[in-house]
Length: 234
Image 1 (cartoon, rainbow, N blue to C red):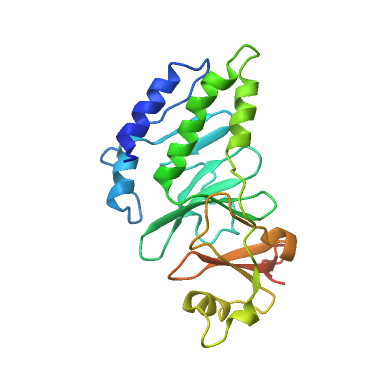
Image 2 (image 1 turned 120 degrees about the vertical axis):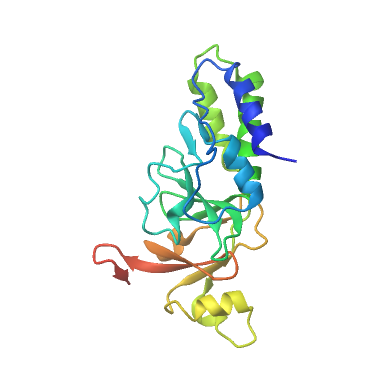
């Protein structure tokens, strides 16, 4: 079982093996968050507040760029900035359930990192641990950082994007049809409910600049083409 205690223990052990500061951040302790946190995630946050492996910084208790991207449907729990313009965040449902860890490309595509925050952190730390033995530091820390960067995003399938008007039928999937009725005809929808890590919805390639909207009861997302100059749908 992946726990905050086990992840923090592994990070402190890793910090002793690398020639740079992992900057392991303490957990929340008795401090709360201004939104619901399920028991498993609360245990994780109690033991671990974040860490960095250059150029990636993970801030589990509030990233400095928390509200820097108005295109996200709910940026209240952004956990990292990959240094290249990609933002990683936890999909928190309206009922307080914590789900996928998602990454938005700088260009605007949506990428599935992991099914949960614990699974994502476990993959990051495992990758960092493995690279210590594979890469070494004979040529400095940059080769290590480059390999870590490349390992952040496993390859996966491109998710189908479906036009909103085709999903509004009464007999369509309720999560898809419900969201499709709330967005304009030029919006595109992607269903992330069974998406494996590495799956990606390249909204940016099909509709350009956009704002994301989420279905109320499922990780189903719509990209609404957006005129950011005038802050309105296109």
